[in-house]
Image (cartoon, rainbow, N blue to C red; front, side, top):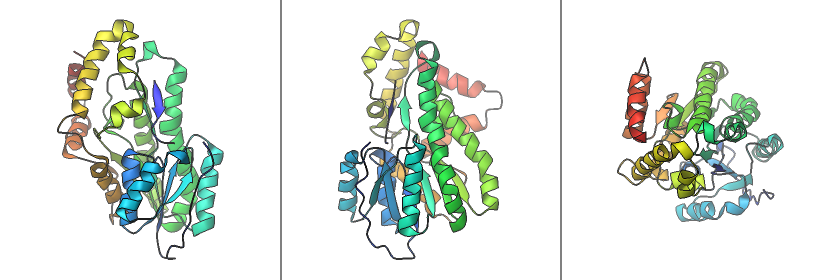
Length: 299
């Protein structure tokens, strides 16, 4: 099962006159979580923030957080899987502000499942949101980022480095994004665009809430994988309640680092735990360390 964590009615945007020198950042998936926190933090850092989401009717939490922080956001509709919606949003930013200095690809969809128990269409849907959605936005923005000497930042996941049980489609999409951006980065650098990926680990509230599924029903329907899935869920839910979990605001600090640093790294983890976890993979030449670790998660 999968669900969009952020992304059909028209936007309810309000454009105020920003100083002409204000840099403009467009952020996708800002209805909750890291996207919401990054939008507020970027506004506090002095950026003109175009905060986008698939359904502007879900902007209440974003608007409340912005008001509490004393920042003004320009909230607009953008559905990352709809190329016309992407084009309209990017064109609108250029029409209103004359520039686009940074894009933060944050919109995505959670997913839980394993290959035998789901359809290839299910997997394709996850790829559409988490991979091709990023490409739609990045492609539309690149000419403007190139003109501005700007930044292209994508929130991926530690699941973009380490494959994880029952996250096959999700990790495949995040692996694809990381490989694409790692390949694009030196090319984009030649035309003045800095490319980074930000890799969060466990972030409070997001795992269960964003899946939008009945976990007990998922286990009951898992057939020969039921015990394995239950073991995975027990471990993972405990992790999302444990000491390694971050708040969205804490994770968003790494996004702002990529946005503000003079020379941002390509790959930025959001916590010491995330650095250790991804480091297991990045130094694991034969794959045994990763499979030894994740094999323990499923009993």
